[in-house]
Length: 458
Ligand code: EPU
Image (tube, rainbow, N blue to C red; front, side, top):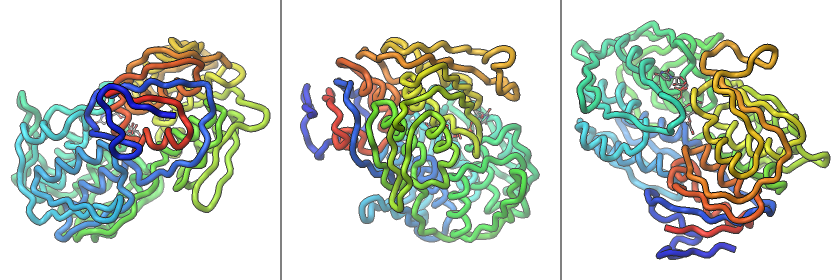
């Protein structure tokens, strides 16, 4: 049962409230989560498809848009740039770019919040207006998160990049032309940057070492609907033939597989049973294999996937994060909570970001036995020597978890704290919940529905 304290009111039932408040959750754990949750469109596609609407000459319609703060950030950034964004039926946005205008650092900065999305406005704005501004970028604090791949790609298209104390100004005095680009690493954002720029650049762009995540493929589908010509060649090569104009699209976003994996991990961690409506097998094959290896069970149905522990309980696994089709970095944090309840020694190698295991400190505070090796493991245990960023977390389980006072560090880490607190005996205080609502729609309502016992303090 959930009660609200402080001056919170049970407004939108169950309330989701304004998104930017420093909310605190008090969670009384130790009981399984049971029930059904629905996942909508993927945060990591929806926000990019919204930016793509800038490239069209007519209105675009995007469906299954989740009510999360990252979507609100992109919405206000589009509005600052003169795009009209209207709500249609639940989860539908209509985006009309016909009034697009330039915006300045301060305006963009004021609306961007902690988001890294402004960087993806560059290509479309350069095509549309001949200039673009990017303030200092935020995003989750999970590493340096540089933007060198983005800037190098934009320069290859002919953009001029000028840095100032306010941020970066880009212009394209000679227009943008197709380029041969090889990414040093298959970066999701840099691949999107190239796609959003190349579709309207003059000539052909060849992008090698591209990211091929399902959300990227869905963005390609959006762009194809708009009139773009993009071919997906073997070996991570994308060929983009620039076209003179694009129209609006009508698209239903791919489901959020990161959210789906998060609820799956919650079922395993709390020994509950969660049906994730809208989840589909194809984009989650790698995750599902790990669920099976760790002793979880799943049942794939027409309208979603049911997750629970198998009869023999959880067993230790070794996973390494990687680009698609590997195990996503966004999955490792929630999974780590479940691994604290698995029998034996699990290892999580993080190879995508240099600082995505720091969240384990709070799990240790809650009773987990986790040791982080910041430079990876030595010798035979070192599975992934191919990237300098490798770090490893060694998790010995099972260990009972107990309540603690923890502060959310980033989106996925924060969600992990919530499920750790739900799995733990006693009461936990989880602070800075607003960060989690960047990417988890109706978090409180869903937890309520799963019979979690918590209060929200505002
Ligand atoms: N990188 C560079 N230079 C660049 C760009 C990236 O060195 O110019 C490095 C990064 O520092 C990192 C690696 O490349 O070590 C991968 O970064 P990538 O560009 O692939 O990530 P991203 O586009 O910034 C998106 C998602 C992340 C998700 C990653 C990996 C969005 C808005 N964000 O980030 O999602 O973890 O891809 O799949 O799409 C999340 O949802 O919680 C989240 C952080």
